[in-house]
Length: 163
Image (cartoon, rainbow, N blue to C red; front, top):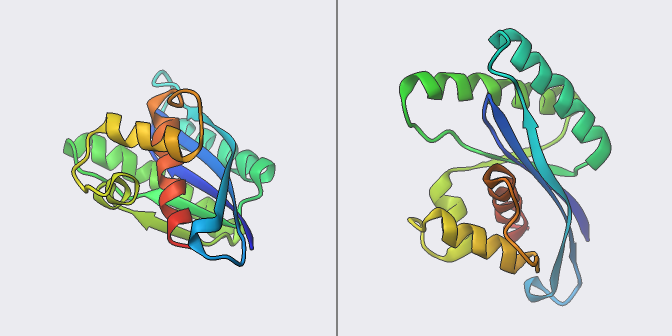
């Protein structure tokens, strides 16, 4: 079985993305092979209105989906920081979910503690532990940068581990 998974770390200023290819042989979970396809970020400028920033996310996510052609998208659930920031991130998440709905792409959502648990076996792991786990699981020579891209790969890996 082969599956392309696109992980998304939502935000208004920066949306992290990480794409992986999973191949599971008939030998069970221990034979899950995961390959990194791409990772990076979609950025929006704080110098333009929110409507334009959301429009940029909409257009860029459509382009990213055309490029990656995912079978499944994994999205990080909202984590509450400050109310004003949470509302902006929620608006960006809404655009991401809208695009997935338009494209009829199935998606799953994970809360930060679920992602930490899946990668480190500890739901309260710190950011560095999660990033090191991403590097190790994907056999990368260094931690993916920026952090938002590493976070998106962590979300994608969480989905892969549940296949």
